[in-house]
Image 1 (tube, rainbow, N blue to C red):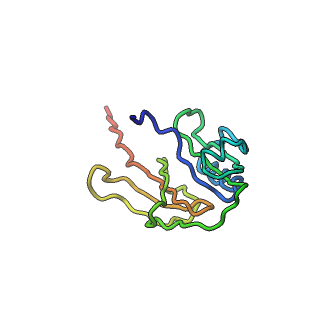
Image 2: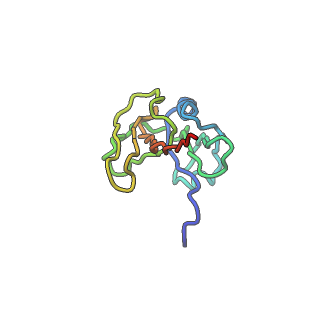
Image 3: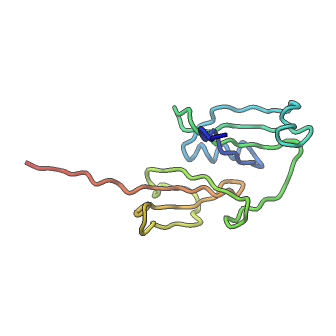
Length: 148
């Protein structure tokens, strides 16, 4: 077996409407939304009788990688472990054009001083369920202006 593509990244959320709104405010659009409760869903997730509302978020006009938001209607679970140093936790990273326009509380912010990512500025924010969202801004390329 060989991986041939990254299809999507999935986050389980407590309120799909709130999460869709958050990711739309970052520039993603909802590409597809459905409630699934068929027997095969329970088999896939290992929970008999599972009912899940699913939304696929993506970049406008893009057909590649999606962010899959899943709200489990049945069985409902509560609790979360959102600290970035807890094994099993993850994050998603979006490249942005201007970190100065971030409208959310930044939990971490720095410019990478050296190495292959030198000059990249990174900020961490949290989504409504506490997932870490990394925002990455690459250095602006200098434009050579020639005057005659």
